[in-house]
Length: 550
Ligand SMILES: Nc1ncnc2c1ncn2[C@@H]1O[C@H](COP(=O)(O)OP(=O)(O)OP(=O)(O)O)[C@@H](O)[C@H]1O
Image (cartoon, rainbow, N blue to C red; front, side, top):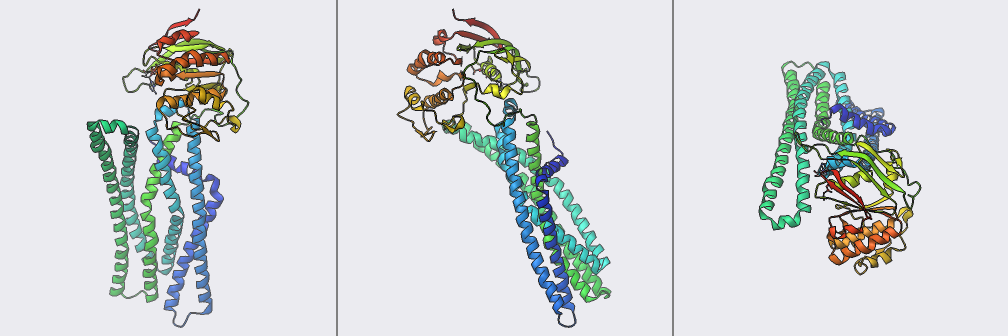
């Protein structure tokens, strides 16, 4: 979604809002420092052209201006660096919160290869901008102060300089517009590059084995994208450099014109001319600095747009997700229900039919073992994501103990579950609410037959470098010790050896049931379907069979 420069500016203002007193003080100090430098130049010019030696007053003023220039620029730099760091910290926290509170389906749609560059690349770009912010204020005030001094020295010379600056600015403006387009294009390629980096890291094994794919990734994907970024960046920076060179030459042209006018029609007094040249030469530095930082400002603008896009994509956070832990979830539930609940994914592309689950009606009672079965892609995982309240049903309701779950109660509702998804993430600690390590953890490690591989040190697993099946057992240990009333296993047993698979279905599930837990299992293991009290079969997103064991 395109975002206008105005919205990136308002995003910047929103970020800066809490720091305005410090920002105003730092900017004023920077301006004071800059103006002191202009005053110093005027004093130097006056001393150089004074007929006799400078008086004590002038020397004192000179020393005072030196001190002011130093204090102004140092304090301003310190102030804006503080603001810069705080702004970045705030931005990072804000983005972290947005991602933590975004509805899962929005997050899944955004995709992680687009998320990571915003969190790293774009935030770093804004951090670069934060560092040039104070020197920018100083350069701007030195330039403006110098212009005022020039106007006081001689109007015609001031006008000649102003015209040169206007021409230079017009060229910069055009170059900046083109440069921004280039930076935007390069930024879009950065997302692509991130995707290729993911393939590089996560597909390392497959790439070792498959040479054609490896070479394709190297030559077409990686190198192609890297070269494209390189070319676009070179093109944009070249534009800025040429425009900067042009601006720099304009200065000498103005000085040359002034010297020529003076040689042809010697009218200006020499003090004015030397003052003009002195100020112009001095002003060249800050002005070039201003122009030189334009690429950083432009990049920051592109980064702000990306951040604004991310914020817009996650603009409907779920309520209460970052509230402090309330009361612990109840030890048991009476029933969970879906009533004519329906969820449709958005279509993958134009003209493609989206996958629709439901409407599904389903009731799971306390201490029940429910098996959800069906062919690949029939909607089993989507169903549990809806039952867990991760996807809000687009029609119909979720009911807990007969009462509908609302957006306000949805996060409390989710705390009833422990889930091991097929693409689960294994956290390496076993710390419960309140920071306690469950006492029974060691016994469970032994029961899961991994005590010889893993121990617990201060609530953290000694290692997670284990086989796929062993890692899943650690995930099961976490689920077990969390003490939630409902446990959900998405093809948990798929990676277990036959002996442990049997233990899972015939010993662990019944013993969890005996503890009063409600258990929901997605399974393709038809040998063990008789363990279920309740079997739900899905076909193409609809319930094909809903049976209770007799
Ligand atoms: N994030 C997504 N965006 C769009 N469509 C999706 C998404 N995830 C799944 N789908 C679609 O939903 C359908 C059901 O997916 P789901 O993961 O629920 O199937 P499943 O029954 O759990 O399959 P499996 O047995 O292979 O795990 C799929 O056919 C897929 O087309």
